[in-house]
Length: 335
Image (cartoon, rainbow, N blue to C red; front, top):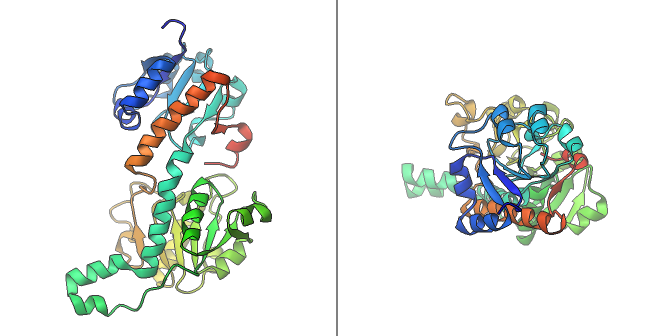
């Protein structure tokens, strides 16, 4: 046991149990000597610094604090940060990459349910079954039958903003049902877009011509409020706007104004302030579907998070390889 690497678990106990089932815990114990730094409260950076000293590997996740200079100074043996979730930028200031430790994450585990959610929201927006259900229960058969006819997905032109992991999972599902895909991503070539089954276009053209727009870009300085009042004004009347990415990407006030005008329909899983306040105007609008930032939350995704994290640690200890490595260059264009 003494020769095994020390693996520090820096996420709260209940979350660790949720992500790492008995089989993954067994595999982790085979790989290293486990040490838990936290009970069921999130650590502070100072507490992490006090615990990280002898660790070769740290498992991080939702609620893990920032790797401050104090943490990095204490982490004199640290070789790998294995993040058991997706968005990682909050944890990692640039000095992490000067420290020498390598970094991986499991965003790929969370992308499939976001792709499913995107498909679900597109279908709901086209067919309005959530509204039909409410009208049927409140007003009866005749009220529900009075709705205008819905639209099919096949043949719809859908604009995907960001060919990220979630964007690609969304495209794969939408393409299967014969949607036409237009893609805006400045880091994607026309040939790469074609390989994904889509057509590369500029953002302005996508917003103006696509009746359905779905956001999948990361939160970066470059993408902050990339869609504001000017861009929302480009959307055609009756357009469907979906955001399962981050509120960081939009001017939320501008979106609210468009929705209050009744000109467009939206489906939103993310908001500038979360939890969404009780008095938020979004709660009063009939032309928007709102969900509480749960697009990626499924039983299967949770199981994959733990499994992918253990797989990465195993690969790293075996031969130094990482399938989902985060580098300084990648961090600049990812969430």
